[in-house]
Image 1 (tube, rainbow, N blue to C red):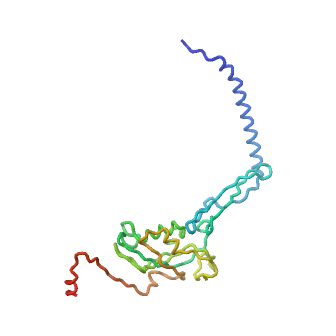
Image 2 (image 1 turned 90 degrees about the vertical axis):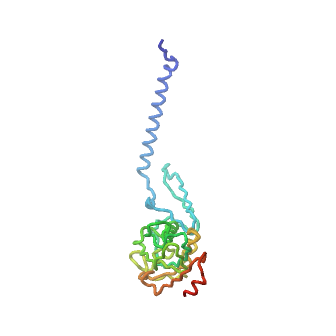
Image 3 (image 1 turned 120 degrees about the vertical axis):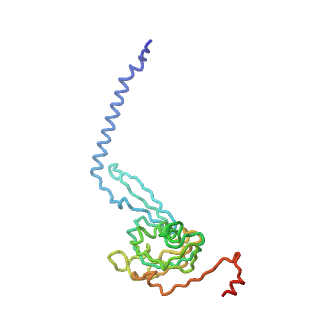
Length: 249
């Protein structure tokens, strides 16, 4: 036996359809109104959409976007950037850079050498570059920031004076260079420079430390400007026969 549709439901359908039709007309009217208003809107120019928030000294940039009505109910985006000290919303490429030398100390027991070209990870160099990218001191590859290192060390070897040089982001404005770089060291008293040592050591593993930095001319090479290298070899005593070794010497 076939079910007979509820007569009350069927009777209510025309009124429901009419109500929906009216609502659609209302929405179309509102949409046309907003389209007309937005076509006359004088919107504020925004920074390019690819802008990245640059983290400085480990702090975040707090950004709030307020929608407000301007004149005739026109919605415009007015970003109110509440930045913590030392922060900026510029892209990294917008910042001036300076050429610096970093002095590195590391305990190499768990590393597969210094150079990141090694076939195994981790290496000291790979950890340093992770820290440089994490702190947003560099962007791009090594060729872009003229990277050089004083030398390499093998697996398990430690160092107290390895030197690397490269372009890093700076708080100081460049002096004179069309490409955004300046070969002249910046006078420290003219700007409050980034504390590279503190910033990098905050994110580096404990067995790698930056122990100092210095401004360097752009023709400086940590490898070719090095005047000398000193190597000292230490062996774990363990089961070594020190007496026999002394006699053999």
